[in-house]
Image 1: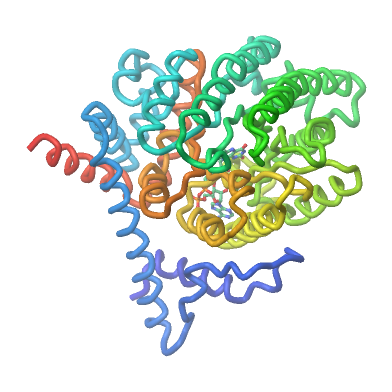
Image 2: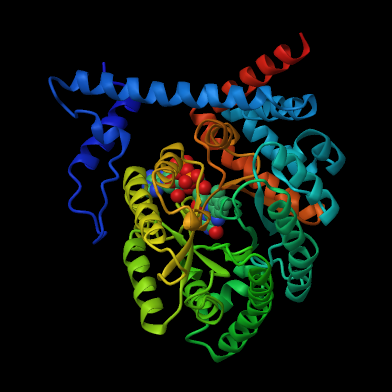
Length: 477
Ligand SMILES: Cc1cc2nc3c(=O)[nH]c(=O)nc-3n(C[C@H](O)[C@H](O)[C@H](O)COP(=O)(O)OP(=O)(O)OC[C@H]3O[C@@H](n4cnc5c(N)ncnc54)[C@H](O)[C@@H]3O)c2cc1C
């Protein structure tokens, strides 16, 4: 008998095999592992067998990567992973945890899971997180002050966000990045830059409406200009730091610090794209490393066209592009589902085509002249990370390698990050490190817990628990 799960896997394969020519004009040979599976070479059952074997292998690989990573952790972290494993054991337990989480005292959260997912509440604590990451071979980070001023939370002062973000840049990220560069015995172009993430909805009161109606309503047009000025303030500081440090390290092709503009819900993206373009035009000049990176969500059905449009606009207006490619975080809350690719496989294909195109473009450049100047491959997907790593490992262009960086959220896909560093010689890995006032990071932690709903569906809670207990026993006995 065919299970529903098998049927859905087969349906996905059928859809994938009948996809027309990709929207990408620059379709690369980035065939996915599952595309090699004969759909119906003999019988449908044979197709199922191959698909299941392939999925089983991916699961086994991920499992052993996770165990290897856990084995190297201190006891305190292992207890945290055991707690996360228990919380995500199955759907009812996870739902119960999500319900009690808002009422759980912060000291308990800090004792149990905080340091797995969050960098700290102040710059001193982030420094300690940086030390721990360096011990794992992760040489830089993407700092994100987790304060959001949208969805009715207008108690937050956007100017405070600007001040704190600038402080994190000058007092922590720039000195931290220079310190890594100075003390590393590695090539100057093999150390990734430090990033500061900017969430557009944090830079104006009533930010969602500002980003949505900036073209049609003069009130919001004025507020949009204020939002642009605030973001520009941070981008300018980033640009100046890069200018100064380029004099000290003239052989480095990549930037030292980068301002990254995050992507939001689809209905706000027109405003975000406009913001990104203005920052590129000002701070990403031809002949210099990029200082500003914008985000493109590859789950959007139109994202290949948007990438082509951004490249054309940059060429026409004489500036460079810095890009962070993500799949996209808002699939569950998106009102208009038609704007997103129909299947996960379509999103995956589009994502892999997008990163391949950008990496090829970056590696074709020896100076800092080509339009696409910097890429953050922001994903936890092992297949996409492997694709990017293989491309980087096979290039002769070592100067521009540091312009392609792999990024994952702190506490997510740690086994895969470990494997990239230990077994694939990936030196260009960073972690997205949220930090800020405890109440705000609590909301971030809740989102991570809710996201683990997906993990529960693929039994990751149990695997994580089993691996953490195994690693604990091996350490103690
Ligand atoms: C460093 C970093 C920065 C990030 N910044 C942003 C940001 O600025 N804005 C933002 O929106 N997200 C951001 N994300 C989150 C990102 O968009 C993804 O939600 C998250 O990384 C999970 O996708 P994945 O590529 O890691 O892995 P996977 O687990 O392989 O992919 C899951 C993703 O696939 C897509 N997907 C799932 N099911 C379907 C379906 N049926 N049809 C079509 N597509 C589907 C969704 O995008 C889903 O999130 C960031 C992630 C990282 C690591």
